[in-house]
Amino acid sequence: MAATFDVLAEPARRRILDLLLERPRLVGELAGRIGLTQPGTSKHLKVLREAGLVRVRRDAQRRWYELCPEPLAEIDTWLAPYRRLWSDGFDALERHLDTTPDHSEETP
Image (cartoon, rainbow, N blue to C red; front, side, top):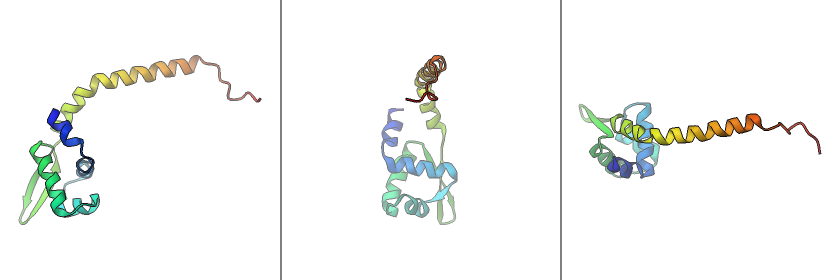
């Protein structure tokens, strides 16, 4: 999982994953959308592929890149206790606000 976090630390790679979440894409389309050269985008795709976050599907001369969600599910599992922590904090804030008198209608 540490390797997945290392890979996701790069903003361009996160943007690539965001685009692949919508649908499979060709490297040229990804390059255009994230504003990098095709070789630069290919380097990021190689890192994502090696981390298991994307896979390549060949269609004649074209290579379609697709999202592999399994490593992201591992991160989601790791984040679950933290999500509960945040949720508990928001619930406590909501209870506090519900018991606080509403002063919004008072005029100075």
